[in-house]
Amino acid sequence: MHLLTEPWPWYVSGPIIGLFVPALLIVGNRMFGVSSSLRHICAATAPRGVDFFRYEWRRIGAWNIMFLVGIFIGGVVAAQFFAGAGQVALSDAARETIAGFGVTEVTGLIPAQLLSWQTLTTWRGAVMLVGGGLLVGFGASWAGGCTSGHAISGLADRQLPSLIATLGFFAGGLTSAWIIVPMLLGR
Image (cartoon, rainbow, N blue to C red; front, top):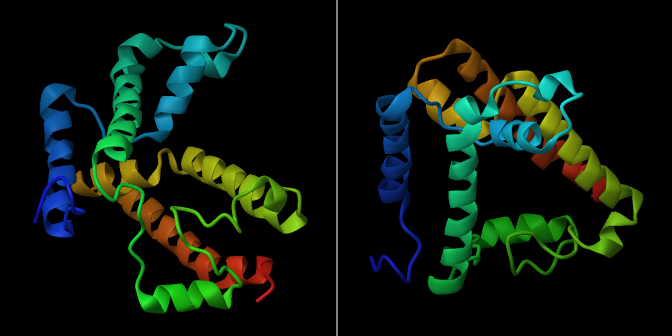
């Protein structure tokens, strides 16, 4: 395995991600997650008239905002300096399934046939992008966190709400992949 030229296998990258949970707990009783960062950013920049954003974001969320900045910088560094960054390795079976939905050009993270300005102007594209975005945002807020927070941190902390949320995320993902997306793509 060449660390800079090949994707890291799950048995290396998974434990590294898993080590963040105890590290965050040891460093300052913090939970791993990304969705709360948006609220902290809004609290830092929003007018003081909105009660939801009136809290001590510097004490609670400053580290979280820096974590989000680190994710962004890490993505830029990976895309610029690591060979194969952004390349998606799909099996032939996955490519056949996607082709069955009418998506024939799968070259990046998201096929241009699904995410483009032209697609957004169709009712299907608007439902998939805008509706999906609203549902993800609402779901993360309603569940009290995002998939990474619940599935990594919450499950490691043996929290029942995180188990319920994670099961809901998986059920929603499977429902979307096997029922809603094929329906929207007309297949």
